[in-house]
Length: 426
Image (tube, rainbow, N blue to C red; front, side):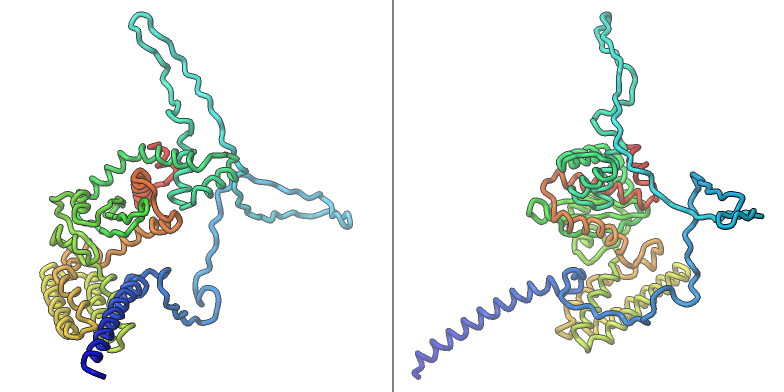
């Protein structure tokens, strides 16, 4: 083999190596969607290890017995016996009553049609139309029906065909899919005023739990954002995942604390942050599962979090808490120093180090939580709807979803009855 032929073979092999490296990197990126710290259980390809059980069904020993509370009695039915025995005709000396409580739903109630007859006349003198005061609806369907349809779709999370079937089964009422959507849009229009009040409440809050997730709109990736404070939950759907959305909702002059994950836009918006410990521990656990040598570092990180929980249970004075925060910062920095030079842990060490000023805000301000679970839990309902619907088809649909979902979730948080509250606005 001469030198020229050798170089030609070597060149081909180098080209093949480059092709394989590119292909390998592509496959690694695809695999990350299924194997990373934030992969939901529904997408995980790993089989869950079943938890060990005692093998016994039912409540543990000594657990208090559960009994259903007796309902309010609306009707009594008395069944009587004769004064003599039906078997031997002997007179019966005394009688007793056996009580059996039955709970039943009412029979199907069909939708009732109400005709509103409104007197009117035309004044020949002032040339004006005179109409009797009335409570007639502006649209064909009444507030009960509109509220029922909206709650079936957005609270019960039923697909349109199931909403249609439910109304037919329970009320013998027929309506098309497009009719259902039209009703829900009308309800959303009526709920815009209280929706904007929720935005004002979030803006004036002392702290907000914020999170975002992708949401398909007409095949494109948009973003569903949630902002949660003490008694309100706000949803917005935007094309952007940038700082502009946070500024739009909270305002550029927002002085409160934001509880969030590590997405960079929050740090760009404000320095008053509490980074989510649930995210951090999840990533740490993922490393522990992949690398046996990391387990001791994971346990150290868990111990720091346990200290946070214990301090918050019995908090000392603010001066002492500030000293504790400095001690914990040094402890977590020492952990970073140990792991940052390991190639497998380097990226995670940088994540911890970048959030150093934001891991212990919850010890200075006890009113906020160390995790962003409130925001993640708020998103969960709409993520289920996303799985059912597959995505949105128009910006109008996105606006309807954010308004209706905001009000339903906020009323739930405020423990208000959904049907009665929605009827007040509709």
